[in-house]
Length: 169
Length: 187
Image 1: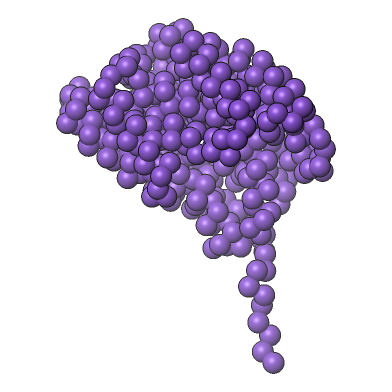
Image 2: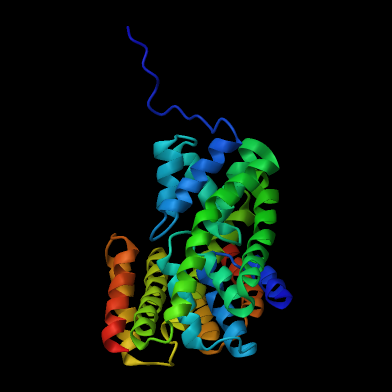
């Protein structure tokens, strides 16, 4: 439990772009490095967090829960939120005063493509729980096109994915 | 003449309790994403904050590490009531979703032996992965005319998704490359 809390606290500080950005690293640690669960279980846990209402950061609580029960879940969530929250608390006013500073603009522009790469990696990792598989690839491509092309509530696409999963897997 | 209050009058929450309830109602209703509800409750329903102000706070919180709307709760709670406000807003936002997500997880644990249940949940997870890919695509659209930015994005994707390199290594390197390129107006 302390191990996961420590690791999630570190993860918190590199989560530029939020939870989607750190999904590949979280999966790498939990599945590849520590072997706490399989890639399929990781994708299922992520699915539960997506299907429940609330901020997607709750996936950290579920990963912690799977590793060390409900105390582990609370510890993982707190560990992930605290460092970033402390930073937001500290930086809140300062960042606004630096609105026109050239270094701020350079950092902002640099982070856009990096976030794109991270978020796409998170999607790839989650969509390939069984390695590359045509069924998973079709479900993932369909929902990727759907969210890029329409403005509907993403819950519809998740439900469609669940239905397709029932018949395909 | 009848005095009508201006339509865009902004009135921050009167106390900690109102702040907590406002964020509780955001968390309670946030099926399919928190951000739209955060906007609706704070900007449209309760008029705690002006739309442009909200957009700026959000931009900051998307830039900062950590959960975006979680950071919004910290920054705004602090602005209105200091540390107690930050804590009240954050706890209000998380309280109900945390209960629900654990309830759903326990329910799933009871039925995970069923092949059908596992198949549905896997389908939802894979579709969620697809949503990330689609979102990355949308974020990448403004970069279409910037080959260096696309190369940086593709490089990050390649080393993380396929090379399985740690983010702790990729982020500092990519940030250095990105800032250097941005300074030369390549991004």
